[in-house]
Length: 346
Ligand code: NAD
Ligand code: DAU
Image (cartoon, rainbow, N blue to C red):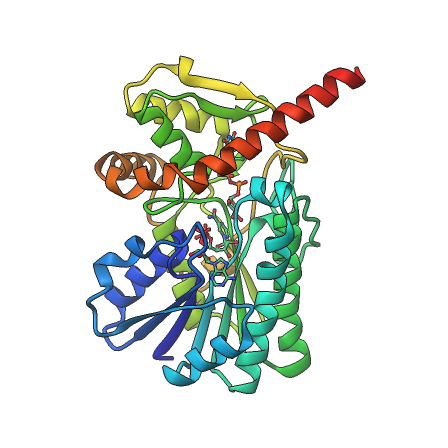
């Protein structure tokens, strides 16, 4: 393993992974392959753009020709697939791109990896494939019960990847990570949205009662987990990646406001997300047995992340305009309509 194609590497976790790998392995070459959707951002990779071991190819993982050309041109031996449509709310408003990229995309990568005899295809999956759990934790062999179009599409894509191991002995591995936060996260996701709104004294929209629980994993620990599975994971296996740092959304909103010295009155309860999963929790002992454990506590990680957004306004301000605002306008109209329908029915 020396020449990695990192699909979706211009996104949040992908970019953190690229930085980590170039720093950690001086003999690895990394080619980022990314469609540059609204979530892809070459500014996430600015620090490595002069690195002779790094290259960028703009392309869609659903386009078999472009994928195969990139693999052959750069003598790729390993694919690490981060590319996906990732925002649950967007998947509720408009699932089309989710089905395409998250299901058909992994299929195209599997076919390319099989035909071109790659050493490994590592696929990034999510805790959301299991669906919600009120108590206890899911283990890798537990059944999938996704509730949103995003999670269902991720489940479909992952099942395809796993089937290529059974059917064709394709050397694959999978990681299923929990809710991840850190630098370079697009400010539509709860933590960067809350932080950037709070900086501007804007309301923090809290869905429902804010009592939903997420396990919070720092992007660096997510990157480390993928690194460990790439080097020590067993072929054909999926590994849960969990931080064991569970917090309710309202607790996270309050912590952010405290770190920024802003009043709690900025928290604004809004209509809940449809089929909002109450809690996700994973047992990561299988990954622990490979020697991985999270390095960043939530206290430390959240404080550093808040400071990163304070120090990097030039990164996020342009993202909170244009397409971002169009999306929020659409979401607002949709939520207002749902609320009006509910009132009419009652
Ligand atoms: P992100 O939305 O920040 O980045 C996704 C990247 O994929 C972007 O750069 C985008 O341009 C690219 N992309 C989208 N469609 C593409 C296509 N068809 N072809 C090529 N590139 C395409 O996402 P993220 O939060 O960094 O998530 C990365 C991966 O990790 C995803 O697979 C996601 O499901 C998974 N995951 C995310 C979290 C989390 O909390 N963020 C947790 C667990 C798993
Ligand atoms: O758990 C892994 C998943 O984490 C990944 O697979 C997804 O790609 C990633 O987007 C994330 O999904 P979530 O739905 O958990 O993340 P999000 O940041 O959208 O929301 C986190 C919690 O905060 C969730 O319970 C919904 C709530 N929320 C979210 C937003 C955007 C709010 O209360 N207000 C908001 O404005």
